[in-house]
Image (cartoon, rainbow, N blue to C red):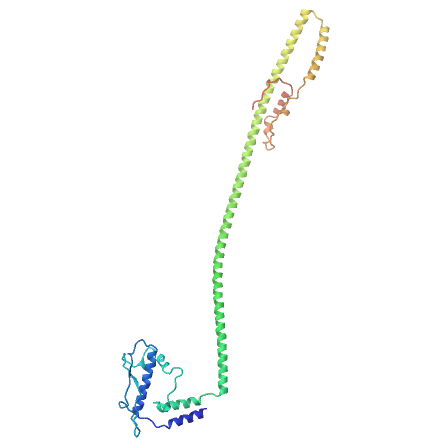
Length: 344
């Protein structure tokens, strides 16, 4: 391939060289083509509109010694709007250069190239460096493998980036949960302290209430015992007075009965034996009537009194040791209605 290209280039280089004026015209046409291609890309109005000038064959001729003059084809005439050439545009020279030879553009003939010798040298040197078909296949294979490796690396990179984003998201969630856990732990600790304080307060209140209840119960029972003691003392006093009055009344009745008996004996001149018989007969009659008229036992044990608690002081009954017995003895007999009253 390199040898065939070299042969073609040699055939092309045998064509006689054009004159210096033709070379200049070709360079002008090349620069005009560059300006035309760059003006189509929109260089933001850096150049003025180009004017198409059509020249005659007598205006510019290609000066070649010993050859006929050739008329110059039509070209573009332009003027700069800036103080520098278009190839020195500071924005982007490469931006302009890549539009000089668009896709599908035919290369000019070597005979019309201004720098054909340099171009031939470049093509020959490049032809020497062109790899063989098997080398090109290997290179393409390596390129494909590198592209696949690059794609896999990019996929892994994207997957790693996604995993990193997910890990960062999980880390943020974990940090948020840790902060929430600390807040909940502090709230739980505060709640436990409050519960302990309330439990201690409830226990203290319960102990105080129990103490107050025991004290109130003791005071109530003591007051009840004192009232019962007063009742028993008053009953004892009344029983003693009633017994004394009853004894005195019995003696008085006996004396009065004896007096009446003696008066009756003296007035009727009765014998003692007859009177004794009459009294015995009357005794029997009264005993029968007494059996018929018997009533329930009116004693202290039959009274419906409240029960005295066992928590009374030990010296309660020691204060009046015989009060209950005396009251029982006093109330063991029978009394008439309204004869004996109990005041609390």
